[in-house]
Image (cartoon, rainbow, N blue to C red; front, side, top):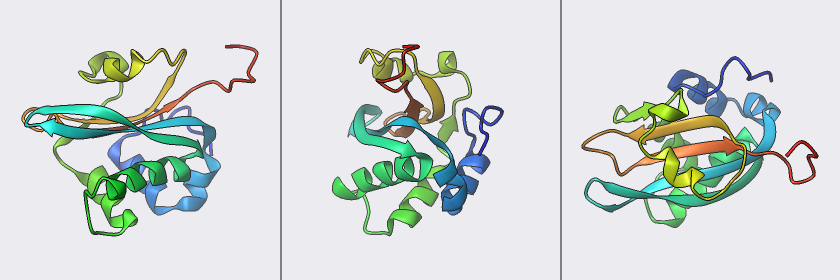
Length: 142
């Protein structure tokens, strides 16, 4: 699936990919997945959810971390769909518009492409999820 003109993903594109694993399996890359977890009211921290080679795996990494942290008794599919539809999250189209992305980028990840960033806005600025694409370690263009 060609995604160049779709990135970063918005809620409707994300939901479409989430509900159709054939489409999300076709979006290949070297993805890093993150989930923002609440620490205290109005303060969250990004946690690494894992790596993925396609968007289906990326969504699963985020959903698995939510389940692992005890965030829900629902199915992974329900958790992810509710997360995507959460009206308190803003989908960021330009990295400079994000209040939280710098916390991830401080990890010296190198050149990254923003695939998906949804972050909570006040007073829900303790939640979010993010998928970044990084170059392959074997890519000589790094």
